Image 1 (tube, one colour):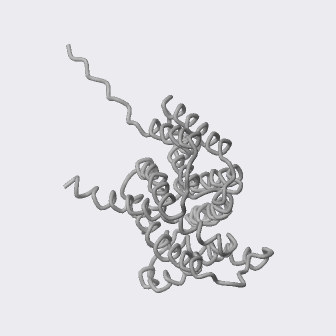
Image 2 (image 1 turned 60 degrees about the vertical axis):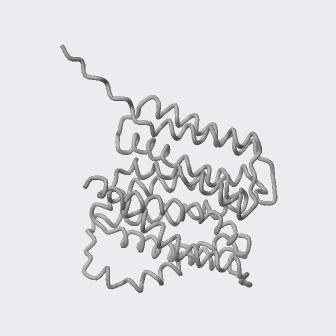
Image 3 (image 1 turned 120 degrees about the horizontal axis):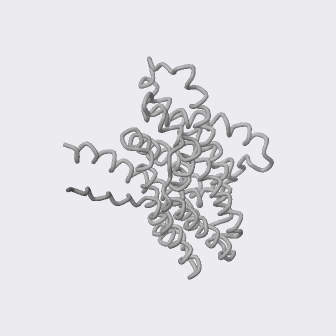
Length: 300
């Protein structure tokens, strides 16, 4: 019974990771044809319209007045700030490098839990944090400009800021998931995102598209329908069923999937230095996720 109880949340989280990994590929294609702001607004407005079709599922839903601040803060963290940073990050770095930085998310969540929730952190978590941080720095400083990554240092820095935003989303969403359905939380993210990015699209010079390249347009449709509705829906469902730390641990799979997809679809390649740096990132993250060994009971 216990295995069956955890199977669906586990499969949902795994599916979300695969879709999120593919989103780096789709986003890279999308920003090659549109401005980052146009890409994110298109993604949010299409998802918002799709969620309106499901409006009947939200009838009768009552939102507590004291929860609105948390709901708005969650949506501002992600998708708003998160996608501002990530969309611009993928203009300057490769999908593979960005995906590798996503692996640091569980570390950021653990550190945030230490400061915000006052959770105690073991020495191995702090060690893992600094190892992963060193790996990210090495990944960025050791990168050379290529066609897919014209300014990797800037791009990787922006992706790191996206992880900070995602941390705020995860900590808040976990608390809200006890009272609101994954579908509502995901829909709210899309609606707030559309409202947030509309004025940015209108007033940012050169942001409004004048042409609609086929590949980039299809990528936005994929991001809006499959990733925004599918990945966030599955992740929010999984997050409502398992601890936040365990759910965030699944993000370790994103860089692996992204690297394979980037290699297959975009021709991404990593240098020897970047492979070593990637190993440090993953090693540091794994170190933070290892469960401490239980002490054996001493019997008289």
